Amino acid sequence: MKKIVVGITGASGSIYAKRLIEELASKGYLVHVIATDKGKQVFKYELSLDLKQWIRELNQPTVKLEDNQNLFAGVASGSHGFDAVIVMPCSMGTLAEISHGLSRNLLCRAADVALKEGRKLIIVPRETPFNTIHLENMCHLSKVGATIIPAMPGFYHHPQTLEDLVNFVVGKVLSYLNINHNLFKKWEDTNYED
Image 1: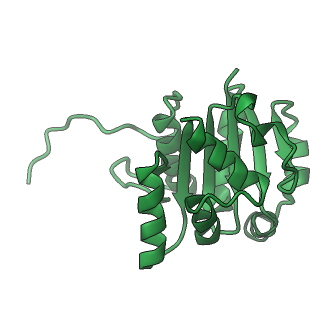
Image 2 (image 1 turned 90 degrees about the horizontal axis):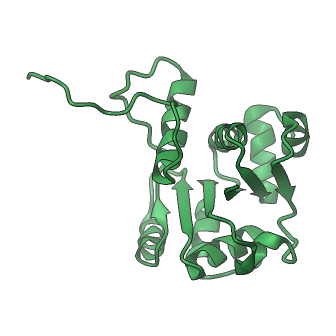
């Protein structure tokens, strides 16, 4: 069974994390959810859901909410063997901490472990506009092996609802991890004329 760490920070876009967790759980993945304090607050503010209660109500034994202050958790160690860390949405503060190798909490430590073990680290920044510091931190992480997938939905699949836009971004992350999904219609050859 694949193990995926999903990090939730205080950036806007909790709906992306919620949808990602639902999709991974529905496919039977073991999901370790790590939320910062601000991540929990924004999750509640944007979705009117308490993260801990929502996970309990999911009733998925494969989804576990981790304590971000517990550096003794399994995912703090490279020997735990998780497959990927996805920070979605990623605040610029968490981005900076990961970029500079600061492992002061479980989320940043799990991201650091992903890099040192050569596992997938996906950062989904949700901020606009980016300043030079943000861009340099993303560039640095890209150079050391992380993948940056901004929360930027496409429109070639003709989205009709907010859910369609969310599914596009979540689907891009799943596609990168080679996880099959039907969250949006993939690009196909067309007979496009000007």
